Length: 332
Image 1 (cartoon, one colour):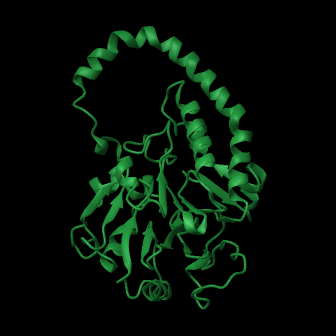
Image 2 (image 1 turned 180 degrees about the horizontal axis):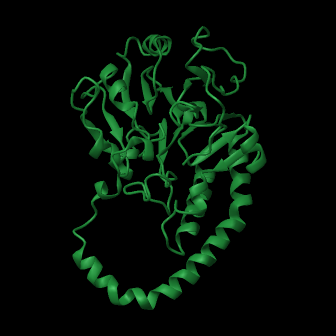
Image 3 (image 1 turned 120 degrees about the vertical axis):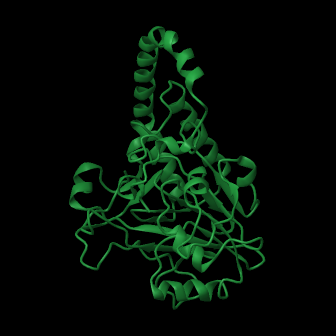
């Protein structure tokens, strides 16, 4: 599902490291941490296995040049966190948009919408799964989604201050299987703070549990589904993903990455992601080779049935692969 910093939950959780020193706009904040000037990140508990494990989730808020704010994702808010967010956004009056970036981060949307409802003055943007499945908030009010972030034109809504990108080679509309394929997401770059908000695709682990230390160690990691079910089952998909990330590293100037379930890399993040891609290249090449062998072996057999299957398929129906059991799919 996700790379997790597992530990027994006894009212405590692993917090991301403090941000580097600079003059913070709200130095008394204890929950929304200003990781760079104009960019705040909140990590909150997210418990699984009947509350035995806390794997954390997050959301961010970034400031635009005109002193308005955009929320990126939603997370459970304690009373203290609610007060900080209200103070930051002038009781919500300067929160002008909400961006939901990951298809399977949905559980906090209803409560957050009840606090900061969608309107013409505060548009909400989401992935196709959000628009289809999360239609009412915790008070029963309808969620008026403004746009679908699978559309590149919608992702340009806040340029040049905010850039958004979806990985090539993966599936943002209809990820299968829903309990494991959490690779694709909308990466958000807040250019003024040089900070990227990312759910699941990237995971930065600074203080791993013993299990993670033995398995993969510290540092930056891709979501494990990258090399299994995360990319389209074609020989071309791994190369599409690699080229996409190479373009992103060339085009985006960033220094920090905030990741959902593990922690934040503050300073040197771009270099670390570039090195991660370099180290992963041999595994991507092996994946290409496996896909080519599988494709060649199946091509003749599939050719006779593919036309009939396509004729019987009524079209892309995203809901077909999405179970209603949040314990199986939701990770935030």
